[in-house]
Image (cartoon, rainbow, N blue to C red):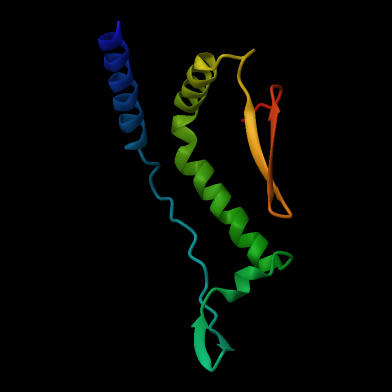
Length: 122
């Protein structure tokens, strides 16, 4: 049984690699513009070419991020069926009634942990 699971895992990995090797033609990745920004801290000067991307409300930044998202969607379009299949398989292997999502909250030096059974991540 264990060998069968290992075999199926390798088959799925092989299918994933084959799917990822297919690229859409004539698609170029967006390239961020370099705008030198000089910063001096503690008598040390450095130039950050992408400081302008730190402004989240800037229209140029939002346009570049949307272009990157569109590029990713285009490049990954051919793997949508495989992504859904892998997601279903992963969710199917999780024990739904006994699965806990645990997170830690750091507050005044104390670590607080909470358990939630109803949180699901997509």
